[in-house]
Amino acid sequence: MAEIHKLFPSMDGNDFQREELLSYFKTILTKIDELKDPNKLTLGEMPAYTEDYYNRMIHKAGIPKAGMEIEEVIQKLIKLVEGHRYVNRNYVANAAPLPNIASIIGNLVMVLVNGNNLWDVEGSAAAAAEVEVTSMLSKLIGYDENVSSGYTTWGGQGAVFNSLRLAIARYAPDSNETGVPENLYCFCSELSHYSLYKSLEATGIGVRNLVRVKVNDDHSMDVQDLKEKMEHVIAKGGVPLYVLATMGTTDTFGIDDIREMKRIAVELEDKYHLQSIYIHADSAMGGMYAFFNDYDFEGNPLGLEDNVQEVLKSYQQKFIHIQLADSLVFDFHKLGQTPYVTSLFLVKNREDLKYMDLDEVETPYVGNRGYGSYHTGYTLECSRMGSALAIYASLLAFGKEGYQELLANYIRVNLAFREGLTKEVANVAITNEISPITTFRLYPEKTKWHEELSGLLPVEEVMEINQFNEEFAEVIGAQRDQIYFGNTKKQRLVNVANATKRISVYAHKFFTISPYSTLEEVHRYVEFLKEHQDLYLKTKSIAYNLN
Ligand SMILES: *Cc1c(COP(=O)(O)O)cnc(C)c1O
Image 1 (spheres, protein in one colour):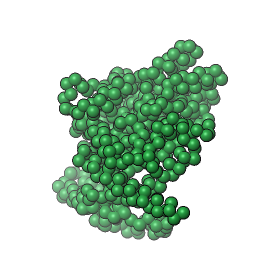
Image 2: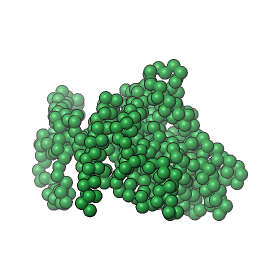
Image 3: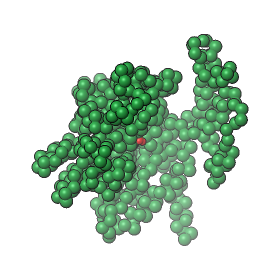
Image 4: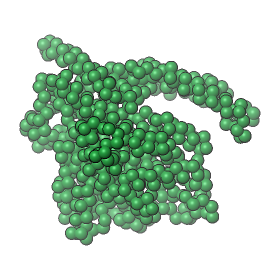
């Protein structure tokens, strides 16, 4: 067993074994640092992704007969890391975090004591961290921390699923025995994340009962359309069960007016004598901006620039109402810069959870015994990782002000990028509101965004412009080891002149998630686009002339 013992941390905390473990950590950190290059997106060279790349892997893989030395295991791991995208200043594609140091340490502590977040007897650190961050964030957004509850779960998508499950159980408390009632309807904006679609699938409600609501020009939900669609469902004998308020759409950062949505829900409940309609704020993308809910714009303690303040003020107006939601989510692994998966699902009223809790007879192994006082039998997971530790560590290390600085910088850089891009590139249109994300669309000649928005262009032309942008995305995508821009095939839907069906428009995405994406970098981003576009236009016109 001595050989096997070498594979474990010490029992007694001796220096020798600690030094050994530390030396492994040091090797890994050193090797990864050696692969870093601030001018590239990847750690070292990307592997050649040939057709048979994964097939060859499948063929070669096998468990070694005798175990390898740890040094060799490390080498193998570093091999996996080679070519990995690394979120530095060249990454402007999506909400991918660069885990901050506190969160790395929090995760490490989680792994070292390896608590099971299911039950405090098996995971006291994770349980305490979960209780603390739930209270901290409840206070931040204006939930009563003595009434609210929360737990970490499988992402913003998991939060949507959990909330829908809550809504069903609250509406029909015996549904765990009798199944989900028919005739339940859910509402979300047509730009919301597909999480709700999946959840309707998985709960058995069925996606046919998902009603998509139109959006306004600022990508927020058209609440008038919401009201009409809910009344339509009611008129046909359906039950409006659940409304998803997206607070920061994934691609364009549109923020739904949750106050108005709640007002409409209450109005319909009264008018038609309905049970309370559940509202989940899908704040996976935007929720972190609630950190400005009590920012003093008069005093401006962080000395934020006027144009940055203006944006943040408008966010404050929206996010102070997030407390109206029955539940919401903080996806720290997006704008909060922590490792995957660190999502906290927050519930306004912990009483709601009782509908989902297991009976004692169903949990013979854990909880409901004389000992232990924290048992999360209401989660969908059984064993749970203690990811609240990474959130806890981050909140302590950043403080409110640290997060405010980080979040303000996303806005600052986007303001500068928009200015630079429109100045340097003639045929570009910025296609969303100012936010941590800038979506933009290029045109073969001059911009026609306003015509597209007003539904004046024929379908063929919109498709052609889509094609033009999609090809350009291929061109810059091939150079993504220099700067990696994102894109979306559904920035929004527009009317067209010669058809009734609305058409999705394609747009490029500039998402400055890295803390190293600062004002000084903006000219690089703009230059990159300008250069590649000039080249692209040239090759296009050569191709046209040849035809
Ligand atoms: C990212 C995102 C989700 C999904 O979150 P995960 O953490 O990836 O599961 C859900 N909703 C919105 C609005 C998102 O942006």
